[in-house]
Length: 241
Image (cartoon, rainbow, N blue to C red; front, top):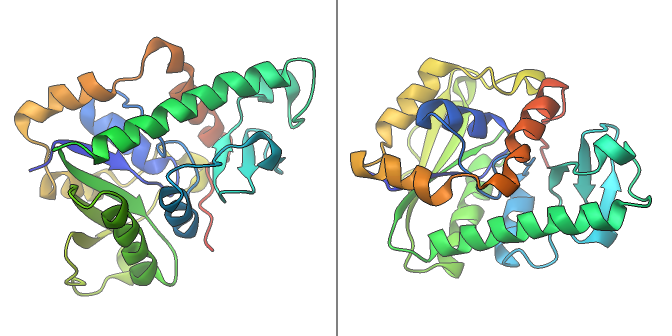
C-alpha cells in the first residue's frame, strides 16, 4: 500500500482521476501540465532549475496554454484573462511573479515528498513509441536524485499496446481501455482507472493524511478551475516527442 499518489502527466487526465478517487484536489507540480517523458526527465534531472523562466515562455496556438522552451513543458496560462496570448503588458511582471512563486512552492513540495519516508505511487500516461525506454529514464532520474525514495512508477498506456510485465524493479506497465479525449480530459475510462487505484491502493490511514498534506491552499485555489476550464476548451493535449 501507498501513502501518496502523484501525477507525472502526461496531461490533465491523471489529475482529474485523482480528484474523482480522492474526493478533492491535491496540489502537485505536474498535475495540470502537459509533460512529455523527455521533458519530465529533464526537469527532475535539473531539480526544477530554470523551469518556468520568464525568458523561455512562449505563446502557443491555444490561448489557455504557454510553452516553456527551456523545459519542454506546457503550462496553463496565468495571463490569459488579462493578456490573452500576449506575454507582455502592464501587469505581466506581476502576474508572472505570482505564478512563478506558486510553481516554486509546488516544486519544493515535490522534493519534500520524494525525500520523505512515504511510499509513493507515481502515475504517468504515455503514448510514446519508446515508452519502456523513456519510462525507465524517468525511473532512473528519480532514483539518482532520491536514492532512498520508496516508490513505484506506474506507466499507463492504452490496451491496444498491451504487453507482458516489463519485469523492472519499481516500475509497472499497466493499461487503460482508452485515454480521455484531449478536449475532455475529465472523461477518463472510470473502470480502467478504478482498477489501477485498486491495484495500487493508498493505506486507509493515508487517505486523510495525503489530502491534509497536499491539499490546495487558498492561494492556489484557482489552478484546478483554470485547468478544468482549459481542458474543456481542448487545451490539454499530450505531446509525444
